[in-house]
Length: 244
Image 1 (tube, rainbow, N blue to C red):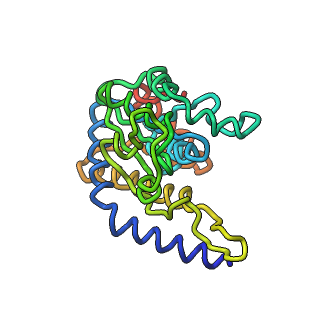
Image 2: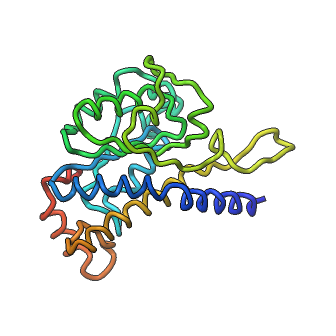
């Protein structure tokens, strides 16, 4: 049965490669410009979606200037864990989080939600756009289009974002059908989303190198010279780094 998961994941990754190139390039344009002009980049997601925000932050081979927005009640350090489901449906909380993070005009806000239907992510995206930041969302378009919004505006995340990255997953996120169970199992969004975002990071770095610029890239602190390299990067870009 495990082979079915790998087979479907390969199909999804190929679809991302075949269809998301223009969107990755558009997102890379925005990120390169923000880094060049001294603006900040933020990443956010609720619950499991926050795993991909964390994937981008303080990461070997990644951009030092990406910051997470950590939200009380929206990660699995709360008990009961089911509280996170109620929290992500709260109106206005997302806007409060964006304002508290200090997002400014010219910044970039990367936000991940698989269904894109809940109030926190819609409010966060709307607030960031109102401030003047560029909103890049990572979502599952087929899934999101199949459900109604839980936001008072009736909008889903992809409808209020500037650039949309589609993780090309199945409706419901799960990809392995077990007929005897009567449902699919095994989610694809974390694996596919991480690959898509790392591809975006690679595109940003390659563009800066091609322009004879030194991108703010971490190397593993477990490599020889890693600590020294990373310390220099963090000092050089300290005005754009908010997690120190």
